[in-house]
Length: 223
Ligand SMILES: Cc1ncc(CN)c(N)n1
Image (cartoon, rainbow, N blue to C red; front, side, top):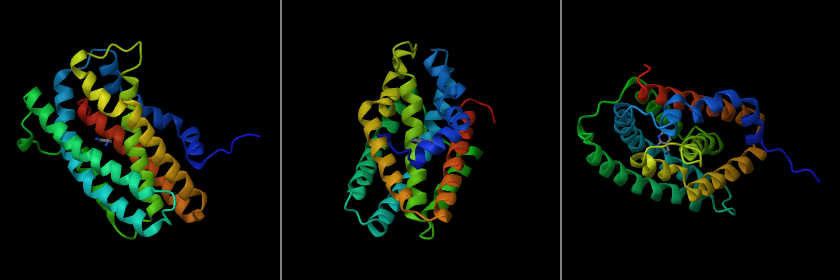
C-alpha cells in the first residue's frame, strides 16, 4: 500500500524553488563552502538575537493555542514546550557567542527585514489566528534553520571549524527530530482543517519562506 501524501509534502513539492531558496541561500552556501565573510556572520548573529527574542512570545502563543485548540491527546503541548525550553538555551548561547565574536548585543538596531519579520510574528500572536495557521509558521521557521545548518555539516562541507558549533545548534539530529514532531502536528491539524484554514496556512508558509530569504539577504548585505 502506498503511503498517503501529506499536505506539507504537497506544499514542499509545489513550492520547491522558494523552499530551496530559503534553505540553500548564498549566505548558507558561503558557510558551507568556507568562504563566509565574518562581518556577515556577525551581522546575522546580532540580528538573529533580536529575532529570537521576538520569537519567544510567538512560540508561547502557539503553546496557548495548542492548549486551547487541539484535543491534545497527541501531546502537542509537550512538543511545543520543548521548543520554549530550547529557546531559553538559545538566548544564552547567543549572548555567549556574541561575547566571543565581540558583538555588542545591546547596541544592535534591528534592520528592516528583521523588523518586518518580527511584525509578521506579532500578527500571528492574535487569538484570531487559528492554531493550525500559527503551527505551520512555527514548523516552517524551525525547519528552515534545521535544513540550512544541517547542509553546512554534510561530509563534503568546508564549514570553518569556528562556525561548526553554530551549525550544530540547529543542524543536529535531535533538532531534526523535533522539527519532524512539529511537522506531524501540522499535518494532523491540516488533515482536519477547513479549506479556508488550509488556504491561509499555505499563504503563511509562503510568507515564512519569503521572510527567511529576506533575513539571509540582510545578513549577507543584500538589502
Ligand atoms: C530568522 C530565524 N529563523 C529561524 C530561527 C530558528 N529558531 C531563527 N533563530 N532565526
